Image (cartoon, rainbow, N blue to C red; front, side, top):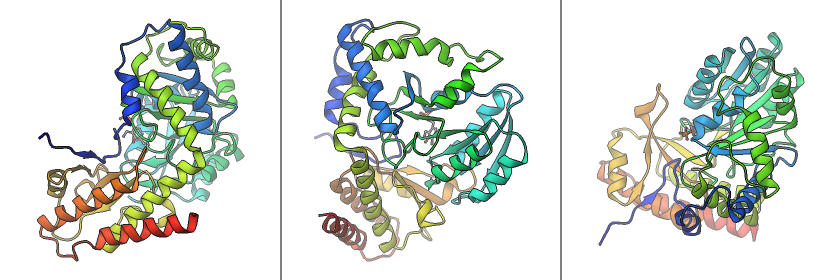
Length: 393
Ligand code: PMP
């Protein structure tokens, strides 16, 4: 018998069978009318998923890093100042992208596991004319959840645009792009969106589009230029196929199915389910005596958990948990990499995934020689799942 294993890393995630069936069908022509309708539906549903009725969606072939580049390359011009709200590895990456684009970049940093105070960000933005403030909604390296609404408000108060990296958040963490005044948000297909890797998704709000239209310098990359993609995306939304660069047709077919499921679940219900699953994981880790990397509850992500190894346990735990049938990830932040592991819990995550994962982690911990009450994490997760179910019933 082939061993089945459960993929519980922070992306790629387990993809629903109906999405995989759509991805696995013969590749349609990108000019096919049925494909055009599917692409158009997916773009329309992106607005619902991002809470961005006034946004312009873009879906192009590429990973999350390409989405990061597209989101900022269209608004930043050489010499512009950008402030990075830095909560970890992926905020550093955004800083590196902005520097490549010729921006003057200032980071507002917090210690590993922390998030900068809004007042600090506001001071940094107010100090000099600022074009853009970037925020990582969930930094996948630390499991830190940013107060996007607060930071975006601080940016707007000083005339700056805001860009949100939602790669580990969009579709899982509560996010309302229009209501929160966020100008551009980006994500990728392989996390809470529930599609295999390969699609870069960007939602540009009206102020971001205006900033792009007002640019003096050309967007430095043809592929990233909204000017090339805008007529294509607008065409597909009207059911009229077009060509600038070949879309990842199979993944777009999967996106159509997956976003239909997200919207059918209801975004608020989906965010609540992610909070419930994360709460059950946290209860289990607490019962096992494990500490989380995020320093405070209110900045702890609901899409993944970053968990510190207890005394005497190291990265070999990841292999032991895998031997028990569940794939988790090691640390990523350069300053703390060897001190923690990560468990992704987004997408179609359900109570049975929580129980299977906590069970495998317990057996891995026991095999690592960690002394604890076997089953304590499972019992705590059960109670947390029961409590939320009965309070919301
Ligand atoms: N931003 C965040 C928050 C991420 O988690 C990731 C991927 N882990 C990226 C950006 C980059 O995405 P990709 O690996 O798909 O390029």
